[in-house]
Image 1 (cartoon, rainbow, N blue to C red):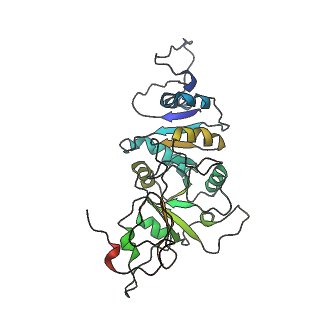
Image 2 (cartoon, rainbow, N blue to C red; image 1 turned 180 degrees about the horizontal axis):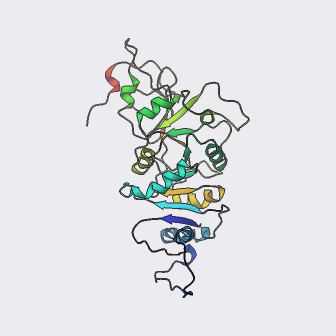
Image 3 (spheres, helix red, strand yellow; image 1 turned 90 degrees about the vertical axis):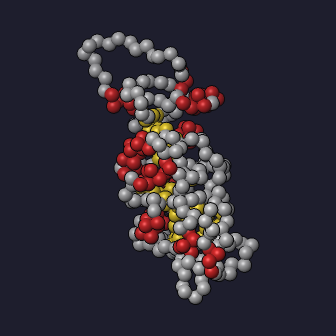
Length: 313
């Protein structure tokens, strides 16, 4: 895998290759005094070498295979987010219409700007998303959710619980809530299918507020939510949790960047459908079932009272 690796510390530009990692400092040949080096070009020539240190077997991925004119930008960030300043180039790329991979509090996700039509279409192509597969959005706050959806169900004063009060206690967190999209959400975000397909009659969208320092740092600097789809092996229904392998596999398909926040656990978010009479769990994942959620095995009756509000711990 070839790519531009961004990191802090030493400002000296080094050339390193995964298939020839060496602990000795490189010996640079002498050049005539008239030759000048463009530091920006040298920066683009850097190749990620940390994968070879992580697992020598991954040397099979070392051959440069990117068909793009510009190389993949690879940013390694501490999972705690203490060096989130490294994410500035990623934020700028997203605002310009880039498609890339970032970590969440569950698995890695391929993301792009919510209002960039061409980026959304490219994301669909890279992931090879089926026509019936909807997309989700990553939001930085409840205000974003209120803007791009019709919001969470509220109590009606006749004993039916205020779901919004309960939701606030589990966000940010590993949940995807299916809500009805508002008119502010661009049509291509809720469309099912290709550019010639009709829009879904009922425009629902999955919303997330991940409890992840890296993801939150990116969202806080954006002017809109991010379109998101989880990263899986192309021909297998399994999550990809290693950012190095993700970059090698999806980079040639057109990714612009990968944010490495460490290897994740293959535990997706819990999906809860909020468009019915009761919050119904569609998929049970990392987020536990809460008392106000129902499943197929439950009778689906309305939720009442203060059982929605968890006890403080």
